[in-house]
Image 1 (cartoon, rainbow over the protein chains, first blue to last red):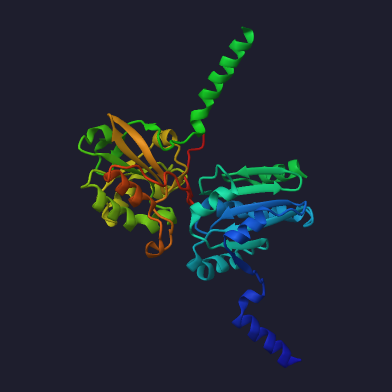
Image 2 (spheres, one colour):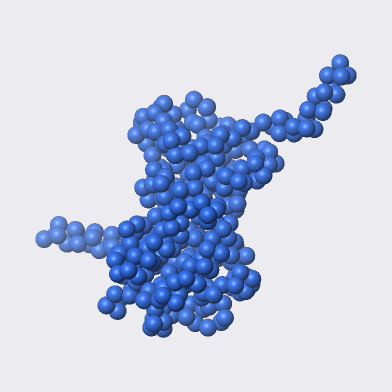
Length: 161
Length: 202
């Protein structure tokens, strides 16, 4: 028994991230398009952000707070990080652990921004934070290319449900 | 007649509200501006009579994407100022929201990074609003044609913010080179991830 406990402690020391395992999938344009064209009759709330973007970091807790108020089968939250690929391990992952981010995070690693920004929204200039809400099946869509607060977020979601 | 009146009133209203969110597009005529440079002098585009055009860069001190491009912008100015296209960098961020973007901090950055170009402070944010700049970095290439400043290209410097050596589309340089050859840019507009301009809370 003592050995098992010791082993667990040792594992936790070596792999502290296993306490709050946050897997981050690295995605490119095809995977982003797959998200944007999801047709499963759920509301998608996709937030574009980066750890280096102060207003983005400020609004993340609102997403964390609002998300549990909805059923996963009704609303799917995805945080798409735009941290530079070389910053994912040394910046993004520690940030997610430190701030206990539990929502699904994907890291968009295609830096050829002009090749995909218009796919998110025709009018998006690439400024972050930006949040896209959509339910393709119900033909609903709202793009918010600016900071949101808890109230904005809840109102936008409730309008679509 | 009443309908016509209503229609023209509506159109008038639409044109009144449109410019707030509109952005200079390739082919548009850009207005001149006068702003304070980091050396304390007021700079106007119209004062630079020798220039063939300008590379107007909405810029700041704090955005990590801008920082990735600092050296590249310095080099672009070195290459193109002598050919008639100087860089004019403009910081429109509200230092109330982003203290690192104050005029004093601009002076420090310009000195530390050896900015050879004008680095102007758009305190009222009117220039950014008029251009429809949304992010930093956000570039507008202008050329002089018949005494007017025509927008030739808007968007990014190239297609790799993280690593200049991996950028295989050099949008801005290509656009300036094509103007120098006497033709127009092939790519006239691009989008890129950047930091939102920090607008004053109204």
